[in-house]
Image (cartoon, rainbow, N blue to C red; front, side):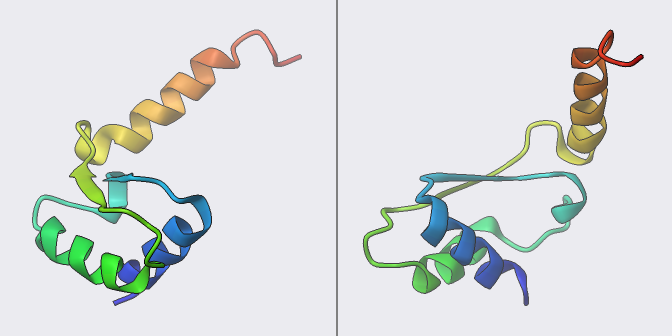
Length: 79
């Protein structure tokens, strides 16, 4: 499983208290987030506090909504 080590490395670097997973990374049938949180917590530095893992409110649509927002934000910047 690649996700726990990848998230632990990012958290060790950035020291973030909350992890929000969405888009193609996580689906409704994804394993228990609490189990993933425990695996990640074991791989982070002791100084990293308790972690809060959440599913993105937009689910699979989060990538599409983010891309649309970026396009609207950049409207007018194109030649």
